Length: 218
Image (cartoon, rainbow, N blue to C red):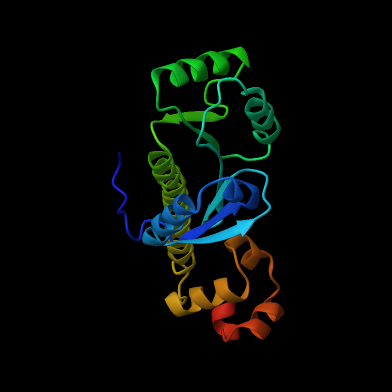
Protein backbone atom coordinates (compact mmCIF):
# COMPACT_ATOMS: atom_id res chain seq x y z
CA UNK A 1 0.00 0.00 0.00
CA UNK A 2 1.17 3.50 -0.76
CA UNK A 3 1.99 5.90 2.03
CA UNK A 4 -1.03 7.67 3.49
CA UNK A 5 0.99 10.71 4.60
CA UNK A 6 1.49 13.20 1.81
CA UNK A 7 0.80 16.44 3.66
CA UNK A 8 0.27 19.65 1.70
CA UNK A 9 0.11 17.97 -1.70
CA UNK A 10 -3.46 18.97 -2.48
CA UNK A 11 -4.84 22.33 -1.43
CA UNK A 12 -8.02 21.67 -3.40
CA UNK A 13 -11.63 20.54 -3.07
CA UNK A 14 -13.02 17.01 -3.11
CA UNK A 15 -16.73 16.47 -3.76
CA UNK A 16 -18.26 13.14 -2.73
CA UNK A 17 -21.51 11.75 -4.09
CA UNK A 18 -24.14 11.63 -1.32
CA UNK A 19 -25.45 8.22 -2.42
CA UNK A 20 -21.94 6.76 -2.51
CA UNK A 21 -21.34 8.03 1.01
CA UNK A 22 -24.56 6.44 2.31
CA UNK A 23 -23.60 3.01 0.90
CA UNK A 24 -20.34 2.84 2.84
CA UNK A 25 -19.52 2.31 6.49
CA UNK A 26 -18.90 5.38 8.61
CA UNK A 27 -15.39 4.18 9.48
CA UNK A 28 -14.37 4.22 5.81
CA UNK A 29 -15.88 7.69 5.29
CA UNK A 30 -13.91 8.86 8.33
CA UNK A 31 -10.75 7.38 6.81
CA UNK A 32 -11.42 9.29 3.58
CA UNK A 33 -12.10 12.55 5.43
CA UNK A 34 -8.91 12.20 7.49
CA UNK A 35 -6.81 11.29 4.46
CA UNK A 36 -8.13 14.28 2.53
CA UNK A 37 -7.50 16.63 5.43
CA UNK A 38 -3.91 15.36 5.74
CA UNK A 39 -3.44 16.11 2.06
CA UNK A 40 -4.94 19.62 2.30
CA UNK A 41 -8.25 18.85 0.58
CA UNK A 42 -11.61 20.21 1.70
CA UNK A 43 -14.41 17.61 1.54
CA UNK A 44 -17.96 18.43 0.43
CA UNK A 45 -20.94 16.08 0.09
CA UNK A 46 -23.00 16.82 -3.03
CA UNK A 47 -25.46 15.12 -5.43
CA UNK A 48 -22.87 14.76 -8.24
CA UNK A 49 -22.98 12.19 -11.07
CA UNK A 50 -19.57 10.53 -10.47
CA UNK A 51 -18.62 9.21 -7.03
CA UNK A 52 -15.90 11.84 -6.58
CA UNK A 53 -14.80 15.04 -8.29
CA UNK A 54 -11.51 16.67 -7.32
CA UNK A 55 -10.74 20.27 -8.19
CA UNK A 56 -7.18 21.57 -8.10
CA UNK A 57 -6.89 25.16 -9.21
CA UNK A 58 -9.69 24.86 -11.75
CA UNK A 59 -8.70 21.39 -13.02
CA UNK A 60 -11.47 18.83 -12.41
CA UNK A 61 -10.84 15.08 -12.18
CA UNK A 62 -13.80 12.69 -11.86
CA UNK A 63 -13.83 9.18 -10.40
CA UNK A 64 -16.13 6.20 -10.12
CA UNK A 65 -14.98 4.17 -7.12
CA UNK A 66 -16.06 0.52 -6.94
CA UNK A 67 -15.18 -0.82 -3.50
CA UNK A 68 -16.97 -4.18 -3.87
CA UNK A 69 -16.70 -5.94 -7.25
CA UNK A 70 -19.82 -8.01 -7.85
CA UNK A 71 -19.12 -10.51 -10.64
CA UNK A 72 -22.84 -11.20 -11.05
CA UNK A 73 -23.89 -7.58 -11.51
CA UNK A 74 -21.39 -5.72 -13.68
CA UNK A 75 -23.61 -4.19 -16.37
CA UNK A 76 -24.77 -1.20 -14.24
CA UNK A 77 -21.15 -0.12 -13.79
CA UNK A 78 -20.22 -0.25 -17.47
CA UNK A 79 -23.48 1.42 -18.51
CA UNK A 80 -22.77 4.21 -16.03
CA UNK A 81 -19.21 4.58 -17.31
CA UNK A 82 -20.47 4.95 -20.89
CA UNK A 83 -22.80 7.75 -19.82
CA UNK A 84 -20.15 9.63 -17.87
CA UNK A 85 -16.99 9.27 -19.93
CA UNK A 86 -17.92 11.94 -22.45
CA UNK A 87 -18.68 14.50 -19.76
CA UNK A 88 -15.26 14.71 -18.13
CA UNK A 89 -11.87 15.27 -19.72
CA UNK A 90 -10.17 13.55 -16.78
CA UNK A 91 -12.16 10.47 -15.77
CA UNK A 92 -10.99 7.35 -13.93
CA UNK A 93 -12.60 4.18 -12.58
CA UNK A 94 -11.03 2.63 -9.49
CA UNK A 95 -12.05 -1.01 -8.96
CA UNK A 96 -11.31 -3.02 -5.83
CA UNK A 97 -10.55 -6.65 -6.80
CA UNK A 98 -8.79 -8.34 -3.86
CA UNK A 99 -9.01 -11.94 -5.14
CA UNK A 100 -7.69 -13.69 -8.24
CA UNK A 101 -11.25 -14.66 -9.18
CA UNK A 102 -12.53 -11.09 -8.93
CA UNK A 103 -9.61 -9.78 -10.95
CA UNK A 104 -10.28 -12.37 -13.67
CA UNK A 105 -13.97 -11.45 -13.68
CA UNK A 106 -13.12 -7.76 -13.99
CA UNK A 107 -10.77 -8.43 -16.92
CA UNK A 108 -13.39 -10.52 -18.77
CA UNK A 109 -16.05 -7.89 -18.19
CA UNK A 110 -13.79 -5.08 -19.35
CA UNK A 111 -13.38 -6.67 -22.77
CA UNK A 112 -16.93 -8.01 -22.92
CA UNK A 113 -18.34 -4.49 -22.66
CA UNK A 114 -15.94 -3.18 -25.29
CA UNK A 115 -14.06 -0.67 -23.19
CA UNK A 116 -11.50 1.35 -25.12
CA UNK A 117 -8.06 1.22 -23.52
CA UNK A 118 -7.48 4.45 -21.62
CA UNK A 119 -10.90 5.91 -22.45
CA UNK A 120 -11.55 6.03 -19.59
CA UNK A 121 -8.74 4.58 -17.50
CA UNK A 122 -9.60 1.67 -15.18
CA UNK A 123 -7.35 1.17 -12.15
CA UNK A 124 -7.65 -2.17 -10.27
CA UNK A 125 -6.55 -2.13 -6.61
CA UNK A 126 -6.38 -4.66 -3.77
CA UNK A 127 -8.40 -2.84 -1.11
CA UNK A 128 -10.56 0.29 -0.69
CA UNK A 129 -7.95 2.22 1.32
CA UNK A 130 -5.37 1.69 -1.41
CA UNK A 131 -7.99 2.66 -3.94
CA UNK A 132 -8.69 6.00 -2.33
CA UNK A 133 -5.00 6.76 -1.93
CA UNK A 134 -4.63 6.08 -5.65
CA UNK A 135 -7.50 8.47 -6.35
CA UNK A 136 -5.82 11.29 -4.44
CA UNK A 137 -2.49 10.58 -6.14
CA UNK A 138 -4.07 10.75 -9.59
CA UNK A 139 -6.04 13.93 -8.85
CA UNK A 140 -3.02 15.63 -7.34
CA UNK A 141 -0.71 14.56 -10.17
CA UNK A 142 -3.02 15.97 -12.85
CA UNK A 143 -3.41 19.23 -10.92
CA UNK A 144 0.36 19.64 -10.56
CA UNK A 145 0.99 18.94 -14.25
CA UNK A 146 -1.62 21.47 -15.32
CA UNK A 147 -0.27 24.15 -12.97
CA UNK A 148 3.26 23.55 -14.24
CA UNK A 149 2.03 23.82 -17.84
CA UNK A 150 0.29 27.09 -17.00
CA UNK A 151 3.39 28.46 -15.26
CA UNK A 152 5.59 27.47 -18.21
CA UNK A 153 3.18 29.16 -20.62
CA UNK A 154 3.16 32.35 -18.52
CA UNK A 155 6.97 32.37 -18.43
CA UNK A 156 7.13 31.93 -22.21
CA UNK A 157 4.64 34.75 -22.76
CA UNK A 158 6.54 36.99 -20.35
CA UNK A 159 9.83 36.24 -22.12
CA UNK A 160 8.23 36.97 -25.50
CA UNK A 161 6.81 40.23 -24.17
CA UNK A 162 10.20 41.29 -22.80
CA UNK A 163 11.89 40.44 -26.09
CA UNK A 164 9.27 42.42 -28.03
CA UNK A 165 9.73 45.39 -25.74
CA UNK A 166 13.51 45.23 -26.11
CA UNK A 167 13.18 45.10 -29.90
CA UNK A 168 10.79 48.07 -29.84
CA UNK A 169 13.14 50.15 -27.68
CA UNK A 170 16.07 49.27 -29.92
CA UNK A 171 14.24 50.46 -33.03
CA UNK A 172 12.78 53.64 -31.55
CA UNK A 173 15.91 54.76 -29.67
CA UNK A 174 17.86 54.43 -32.92
CA UNK A 175 16.12 57.67 -33.95
CA UNK A 176 18.39 60.63 -33.11
CA UNK A 177 17.20 62.50 -30.03
CA UNK A 178 14.85 59.72 -28.80
CA UNK A 179 15.92 58.02 -25.56
CA UNK A 180 14.49 55.12 -23.52
CA UNK A 181 12.12 57.42 -21.64
CA UNK A 182 10.65 58.72 -24.90
CA UNK A 183 10.36 55.22 -26.33
CA UNK A 184 8.59 53.88 -23.21
CA UNK A 185 6.21 56.81 -23.26
CA UNK A 186 5.37 56.18 -26.93
CA UNK A 187 4.61 52.49 -26.44
CA UNK A 188 2.43 53.17 -23.39
CA UNK A 189 0.51 55.96 -25.11
CA UNK A 190 0.26 54.61 -28.64
CA UNK A 191 1.46 51.02 -28.87
CA UNK A 192 3.32 49.37 -31.72
CA UNK A 193 5.83 50.87 -34.13
CA UNK A 194 3.21 50.59 -36.87
CA UNK A 195 0.68 52.53 -34.75
CA UNK A 196 3.26 55.24 -34.03
CA UNK A 197 4.10 55.59 -37.72
CA UNK A 198 0.40 56.08 -38.51
CA UNK A 199 -0.39 58.44 -35.61
CA UNK A 200 -0.75 62.13 -36.38
CA UNK A 201 1.69 64.60 -34.86
CA UNK A 202 -1.14 66.32 -33.01
CA UNK A 203 -2.22 63.00 -31.45
CA UNK A 204 1.31 62.28 -30.26
CA UNK A 205 1.68 65.80 -28.84
CA UNK A 206 -1.64 65.47 -26.98
CA UNK A 207 -0.85 62.04 -25.50
CA UNK A 208 2.85 62.33 -24.66
CA UNK A 209 5.25 64.95 -23.36
CA UNK A 210 7.42 64.80 -26.49
CA UNK A 211 8.32 68.26 -27.73
CA UNK A 212 7.53 69.40 -31.25
CA UNK A 213 11.26 69.41 -31.97
CA UNK A 214 11.66 65.75 -31.04
CA UNK A 215 8.45 64.87 -32.81
CA UNK A 216 9.91 66.06 -36.11
CA UNK A 217 12.55 63.33 -35.78
CA UNK A 218 10.01 60.50 -35.77
